[in-house]
Image (tube, rainbow, N blue to C red; front, side):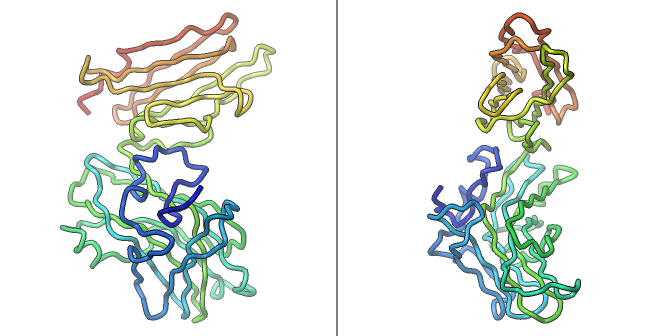
Length: 312
């Protein structure tokens, strides 16, 4: 995959919809233009395009952040506005520390890499840029190979004054020596609910709805967790039971509020295995359960009265 916006494209492990990725739709530069990034300490910090890549994509590369002195070296992106109703953000990617740093034998000599996000009570983009600083993330210490990292930023209450955000890259070494780290596949995804995709969880309607499932093989060997297939949009997902290429259930969660003041749930299964699917509205803190006893092929489910929670 070509990275037109630096490494600000969704990593392969991320199943969030592209339209929710603020970095892809924002003005964050390209491989030949790093103007959208600014250094906290420009006299001792550099950011450059680097051919090494965390996904072994030979047509792409990564961001290389280097500091010539000890202490924290920080780059931040241009500021972007928090969309209305968004209460959660996920930021992540892959991070590695370059092998040319030499032995890291003590805590003071170890290189720490940071990938994070922060939001401010700023009145404008210019105000945000003037104040943007800090890591906002737990550091990774000394990973020589590529390491996946993810941080979740949540707003405990809907606070409209926390309205401008930025993504942060940082590298730190305390013993007054230089430090270098590389960052690949950086992404930032907005959520109105607190659902974030995992191997066994699919998320819908900007993270408001979460779907999990279990299946029960006919040989009586117990139960297993349904897994999320790679195919997913913001309102549709696919669950698998026995392998990633064997798709079992299509799940759709649709916003029908303008039609009957309900959120709808549709299930279409291509299996005769017993299963149980749970759909949760995380804002309303309520759930619906859909079960098939097994034996016969599972019928389709069209529940257009699933969640009368449109007012939240």
